[in-house]
Length: 214
Image (cartoon, rainbow, N blue to C red; front, side, top):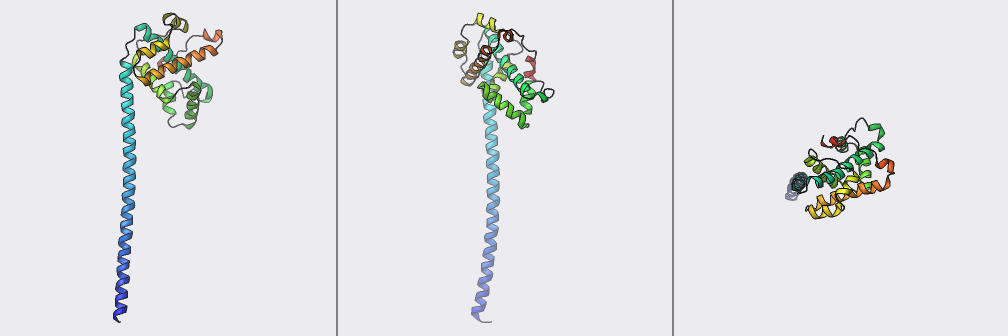
């Protein structure tokens, strides 16, 4: 075997070794990319969780810090609970076959996470009412914080005690997200009241108020 042949064989073997090393490096880089993507996904989820928790803590603090008189609190509570009941009722109207499985608003909120049909109906109802998920969080937080001591006032009583509920909310509620949610709750109820017949307006409030706490 001459020197040229020996050199060629050595070069071929060297190239094979280099190729194997390159393949090994490529596999390592793919593994690193996968690890990086996995870490980025976990970091994103963790950041979103922290942001959500921070927002919830801020909302809870804002709700607890409200300085309303008992009468004013009762009026706000009345709007909040009527909106929550309205949402629950609309869901049941659109999903009559699931009435037994959705006895409370809380059950709707739980099941919509995994049930696409309930989620689609819920989203459509929120859109119809001009509400967002953040509004529901704010209203439920308000209900949980004050529901045990507040009383429901009828529309007539609310009008008698407070002439301008919008001014009351904008003047007293400093947290912008909570303020916006309460204003939208008032808007939903006032629009609905205008659309109902006098007989419907006289109907008693449905006994599903405690359900939101579940």
